[in-house]
Length: 145
Image 1 (cartoon, one colour):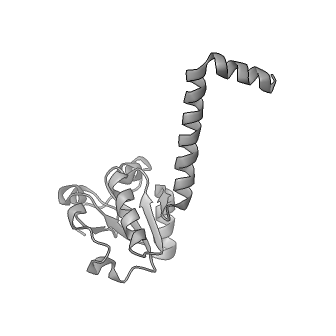
Image 2: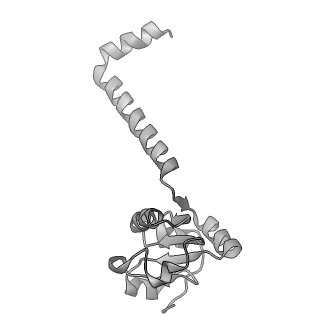
Image 3: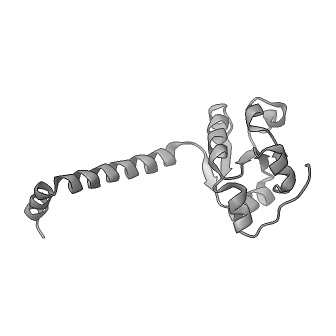
């Protein structure tokens, strides 16, 4: 197959070609943005290692009722509406690894972005949230922290 063949295909199938180019640009953009966003997604096993090795602060953004039903041992509960990077809980943790967790992993990514903007050095979020933690058969603690 030559370059001329590819051009002829693109001319005959304009919409398919434009779709391919659009998807390629979108994938490249999201991957480059992920590399430069400043915070990292963790899998449950990586979070366990970070907690054990570097004494990471785990902040759980789940609703109070969900937190009491089950949370990661040692995590601190913060309501999403009250999450503030300048709070007392986070004041001394700018140099420590801070991991933000929620039920599904979506809200914690936004909180991680806010922490990074506020000057925290080592910011992580649990990809997949508590659901991913449970899927990895890792234990949850019930009740208040």
